[in-house]
Image 1 (cartoon, rainbow, N blue to C red):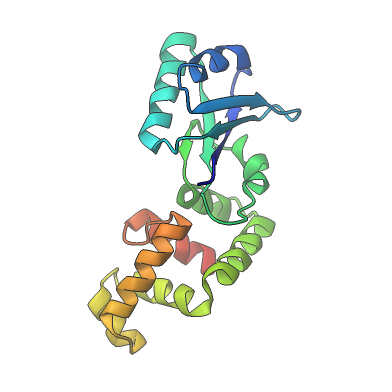
Image 2 (cartoon, rainbow, N blue to C red):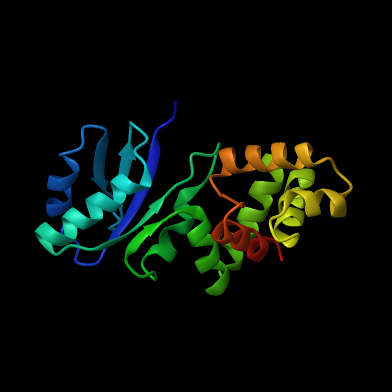
Length: 184
């Protein structure tokens, strides 16, 4: 089991206040990096709802807000590439599908190219084409199966595998849009 990383860019740089909140969670540790980004390690794989709770506490108790990127727990995923983008975003908790949309609209070509190569090497072109075909078929597995000349169970298997490993839910509008924007 691997630890999950979360990167935070705080708006008012009050690390001590944030550290007080983080200490209340026994599975989390926080470190202030030299670049001013806070790196949180989650040893217990808390869900995003818990991170939202941390943000709410920080806002209520310390008037502290931040941008957070929950790094996908994919093999060899380089979450540090996204750190320059964090300071440009509105406060909130961002998953990879959220950052893909932001990155494409702000024209970060280097990160886009990295992600395309990363997902192609992680899943292979067949799975990526299946995901894109599914999204283009209005997220309908039966229509995608007809258009891709594939059995519907094969499509569902590839989609489930992609969602589980990448943490991008292409069965949702947000996840599907992220993949289409990334690979267009």
